[in-house]
Image (cartoon, rainbow, N blue to C red):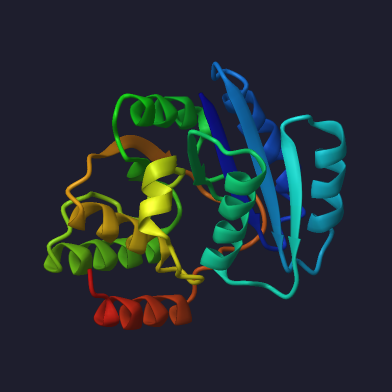
Length: 227
């Protein structure tokens, strides 16, 4: 059994080495082959050079460079397609590069997929990332429930998919709707989706990429969505 994980990175020079080191500790506790693809998604700082150095020194790590920035979903999809093509993992998925979720949850998510879940993801039950983000998340959750979505915390990451789920969903969104696209598609097919509770920690450095434009973009995508 093999796991492939993509991490998109945009100007995360201050965090990338710590984030990768913590993720590798979690991945190396898993029995089986593991691969970690770091996606430099059009960074303008030293992120690209750092992930090249990590790829040269850590045997599980690949570096992938995109220029210009391909969007949140575009960076993830590039990493997933690289993993699928180059390594053919049994389970693949994505995590964030901001260090706000403890990667120790990944082995449990992987085990859930091996046990039959088509998607396994985190559910952020404790949040330490500020009032503004909590308000945005609450409004987001209410909107998704109004559309009949039953999965809690649709955007919870890391998010893992069995390979057959990834192939069947054929995800296309290159923006912030990618997480919702995956969950909406899985629920429409009646698949098992597992959620593991975790804490959303404050950022240690850098800045959030979620903005007002992100929220408007998501709303437009949801209005157009057809399962």
